Amino acid sequence: MEWGLILAGLGAFIAAVVAGVGSAVWVGKAGQAVAGVVAEEPEKFGSLLILQLLPGTQGVYGLIISFLILTKIGVLGGATPDFSLGLYYLIASLPIAIGGGLSAVAQGKAAVSSIALVAKRGEGFGNGMLLTLMVETYALFAFLISLIMVISK
Image (cartoon, rainbow, N blue to C red; front, side, top):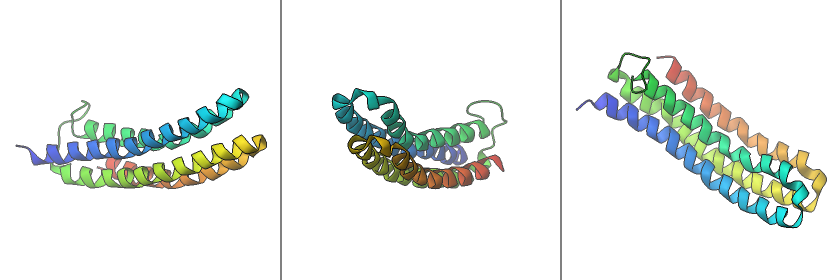
Protein backbone atom coordinates (compact mmCIF):
# COMPACT_ATOMS: atom_id res chain seq x y z
CA MET A 1 0.00 0.00 0.00
CA GLU A 2 1.38 3.40 -0.97
CA TRP A 3 0.71 5.74 1.96
CA GLY A 4 1.92 8.80 0.08
CA LEU A 5 -0.74 8.29 -2.57
CA ILE A 6 -3.41 7.81 0.09
CA LEU A 7 -2.38 10.95 1.98
CA ALA A 8 -2.19 13.08 -1.17
CA GLY A 9 -5.55 11.71 -2.34
CA LEU A 10 -7.01 12.52 1.06
CA GLY A 11 -5.68 16.07 0.70
CA ALA A 12 -7.28 16.42 -2.73
CA PHE A 13 -10.54 15.07 -1.34
CA ILE A 14 -10.52 17.40 1.67
CA ALA A 15 -9.75 20.49 -0.43
CA ALA A 16 -12.63 19.82 -2.81
CA VAL A 17 -15.22 18.52 -0.37
CA VAL A 18 -14.88 20.81 2.65
CA ALA A 19 -14.73 24.03 0.63
CA GLY A 20 -17.33 22.66 -1.81
CA VAL A 21 -19.86 21.67 0.84
CA GLY A 22 -19.61 25.07 2.53
CA SER A 23 -20.18 26.73 -0.83
CA ALA A 24 -23.04 24.47 -1.85
CA VAL A 25 -24.94 24.92 1.40
CA TRP A 26 -24.68 28.70 1.38
CA VAL A 27 -25.30 29.17 -2.34
CA GLY A 28 -28.45 27.15 -1.70
CA LYS A 29 -29.52 29.28 1.27
CA ALA A 30 -28.83 32.45 -0.68
CA GLY A 31 -30.87 30.99 -3.56
CA GLN A 32 -33.80 30.50 -1.21
CA ALA A 33 -33.53 34.14 -0.17
CA VAL A 34 -33.36 35.27 -3.80
CA ALA A 35 -36.41 33.21 -4.71
CA GLY A 36 -38.41 34.92 -1.98
CA VAL A 37 -37.46 38.37 -3.25
CA VAL A 38 -37.87 37.59 -6.94
CA ALA A 39 -41.37 36.22 -6.33
CA GLU A 40 -42.39 39.78 -5.47
CA GLU A 41 -39.87 41.78 -7.53
CA PRO A 42 -38.65 39.80 -10.57
CA GLU A 43 -36.68 42.77 -11.90
CA LYS A 44 -34.13 42.28 -9.09
CA PHE A 45 -33.13 38.81 -10.28
CA GLY A 46 -29.90 39.82 -12.08
CA SER A 47 -28.30 41.68 -9.21
CA LEU A 48 -29.44 39.15 -6.63
CA LEU A 49 -28.04 36.27 -8.68
CA ILE A 50 -24.57 37.81 -8.32
CA LEU A 51 -24.96 37.93 -4.55
CA GLN A 52 -26.16 34.33 -4.52
CA LEU A 53 -23.15 33.07 -6.49
CA LEU A 54 -20.43 34.69 -4.37
CA PRO A 55 -20.29 31.99 -1.66
CA GLY A 56 -19.61 29.50 -4.45
CA THR A 57 -16.09 30.70 -5.16
CA GLN A 58 -14.60 28.77 -2.25
CA GLY A 59 -15.76 25.51 -3.82
CA VAL A 60 -14.03 26.50 -7.05
CA TYR A 61 -10.81 27.30 -5.18
CA GLY A 62 -10.93 23.93 -3.42
CA LEU A 63 -11.52 22.15 -6.72
CA ILE A 64 -8.52 23.88 -8.31
CA ILE A 65 -6.25 22.81 -5.43
CA SER A 66 -7.63 19.28 -5.67
CA PHE A 67 -6.90 19.09 -9.41
CA LEU A 68 -3.39 20.47 -8.88
CA ILE A 69 -2.62 17.89 -6.20
CA LEU A 70 -3.95 15.05 -8.36
CA THR A 71 -1.88 16.31 -11.28
CA LYS A 72 1.26 16.63 -9.15
CA ILE A 73 1.02 13.02 -7.98
CA GLY A 74 0.33 11.74 -11.49
CA VAL A 75 -3.29 10.69 -11.04
CA LEU A 76 -4.49 13.14 -13.70
CA GLY A 77 -1.39 12.69 -15.83
CA GLY A 78 1.27 15.18 -16.71
CA ALA A 79 3.67 14.21 -13.96
CA THR A 80 5.75 11.27 -12.94
CA PRO A 81 4.07 9.92 -9.83
CA ASP A 82 5.84 11.09 -6.69
CA PHE A 83 4.14 9.71 -3.63
CA SER A 84 6.86 10.83 -1.21
CA LEU A 85 5.12 14.20 -0.82
CA GLY A 86 1.76 12.77 0.21
CA LEU A 87 1.78 14.21 3.72
CA TYR A 88 2.97 17.54 2.34
CA TYR A 89 0.04 17.71 -0.11
CA LEU A 90 -2.38 16.76 2.64
CA ILE A 91 -1.10 19.67 4.72
CA ALA A 92 -1.17 21.98 1.67
CA SER A 93 -4.87 21.22 1.24
CA LEU A 94 -5.78 22.37 4.74
CA PRO A 95 -5.71 26.18 4.25
CA ILE A 96 -8.31 26.11 1.47
CA ALA A 97 -10.29 23.34 3.13
CA ILE A 98 -10.55 25.06 6.49
CA GLY A 99 -10.31 28.69 5.35
CA GLY A 100 -12.50 28.07 2.34
CA GLY A 101 -15.13 26.13 4.24
CA LEU A 102 -15.39 28.69 7.04
CA SER A 103 -15.32 31.69 4.70
CA ALA A 104 -18.08 30.10 2.58
CA VAL A 105 -20.27 30.06 5.68
CA ALA A 106 -19.41 33.65 6.58
CA GLN A 107 -19.82 34.84 3.01
CA GLY A 108 -23.10 32.99 2.68
CA LYS A 109 -24.46 34.72 5.75
CA ALA A 110 -23.30 38.09 4.41
CA ALA A 111 -24.89 37.30 1.04
CA VAL A 112 -28.24 36.36 2.59
CA SER A 113 -28.23 39.58 4.62
CA SER A 114 -27.27 41.57 1.53
CA ILE A 115 -30.13 39.99 -0.40
CA ALA A 116 -32.48 41.17 2.37
CA LEU A 117 -30.92 44.63 2.08
CA VAL A 118 -31.61 44.75 -1.66
CA ALA A 119 -35.14 43.49 -1.07
CA LYS A 120 -35.83 46.42 1.24
CA ARG A 121 -33.79 49.02 -0.62
CA GLY A 122 -33.07 48.28 -4.26
CA GLU A 123 -30.29 50.86 -4.33
CA GLY A 124 -28.44 48.93 -1.61
CA PHE A 125 -26.91 46.45 -4.06
CA GLY A 126 -23.49 48.15 -4.07
CA ASN A 127 -23.33 48.15 -0.29
CA GLY A 128 -24.41 44.51 -0.10
CA MET A 129 -21.92 43.51 -2.76
CA LEU A 130 -19.07 45.20 -0.90
CA LEU A 131 -20.05 43.59 2.40
CA THR A 132 -20.17 40.16 0.77
CA LEU A 133 -16.91 40.63 -1.12
CA MET A 134 -15.01 41.57 2.03
CA VAL A 135 -15.24 37.94 3.14
CA GLU A 136 -13.84 36.82 -0.22
CA THR A 137 -10.51 38.34 0.80
CA TYR A 138 -9.99 35.62 3.38
CA ALA A 139 -10.99 32.87 0.98
CA LEU A 140 -8.38 34.22 -1.43
CA PHE A 141 -5.72 34.26 1.29
CA ALA A 142 -6.42 30.60 2.07
CA PHE A 143 -6.43 29.71 -1.63
CA LEU A 144 -3.11 31.48 -2.22
CA ILE A 145 -1.42 29.67 0.67
CA SER A 146 -2.59 26.29 -0.60
CA LEU A 147 -1.71 27.22 -4.19
CA ILE A 148 1.81 28.37 -3.31
CA MET A 149 2.42 25.22 -1.28
CA VAL A 150 1.18 22.89 -4.02
CA ILE A 151 2.98 24.50 -6.97
CA SER A 152 6.26 24.94 -5.06
CA LYS A 153 6.91 21.19 -4.98
